[in-house]
Image (spheres, one colour):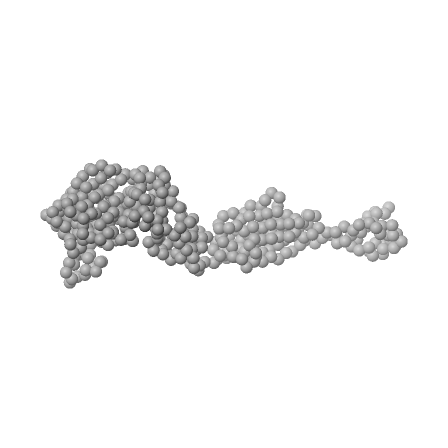
Length: 407
């Protein structure tokens, strides 16, 4: 904070007051009176006290010059030996004024609302001393200048879907690496109603997931807050903004796909409502085992084996339009319509890792299952779905999940 002061002129320095029958003489020095009345005339007043001018107000602006201010903290102005009559704070780059509150006694002023990163603010303080003489003080305050600002994206994106299934984790993705994971985690909160204990797990330096010990209870409301603005996330990176969202969980829909029976049972809030013949991944392309969560659904997509390394000219290559697709992993696994494998559904596993359904069953599944609903695969001969593979969150035990937290 840089401070310069200007004071209003005082009418009197050290004054001597002479009371005579002719009136009152106010001067700046006893010699002035002596010249007018003579030394002998002033002799009786020699012992009278002089009158001093009021001291100039002392203005302190916080923080001090050279100390960067976190923009979530206020600029404060305090005045001693006088009062502040007005305080004007302005962003020197944009000209935007900063709102603030002056205390009724005039001794303190405090800015309200967040400030900007990498900004300089001019502070102008109009004062009055104890004798009501006006004065003025100028200063500057600079805020923290991050090397980078990390923006938090939410998954599911706010308002992207009306509700989600019981398996949907809360995901925060950053556009810059986070080196102080604990600081980030402290700024992230998920509140559930009804209450369900949960924990964060860091998938990578840019992605962290939140889930409870077991699937969310149907009807749960989740309130998500990322109070990251002004938070030092390590290595000079600060949170770029604060964000909130609300997520509602719909009824429990769980599909249990068994590679041993080649059947999939559908449970609605724990009750078996339908059984379908399926075909899972062949021995050369076994489906991952464990809970999978639907992350996307499309009426049709082009499936291309080259996206996972089997390209044109190689054995097993395919590229074809497939209908009624619900993604259950980023490794190319879907639940979808497969009219070409109806003859094998219910008897053998012949897919490239997907859950193949007859067209009518695929339509029913597409109509009832959506984002966040669960497909549990067993007896496929494949490895467990990796925790990082959208979404392998439920593969981990609760103890292992909590171990992935930075707190």
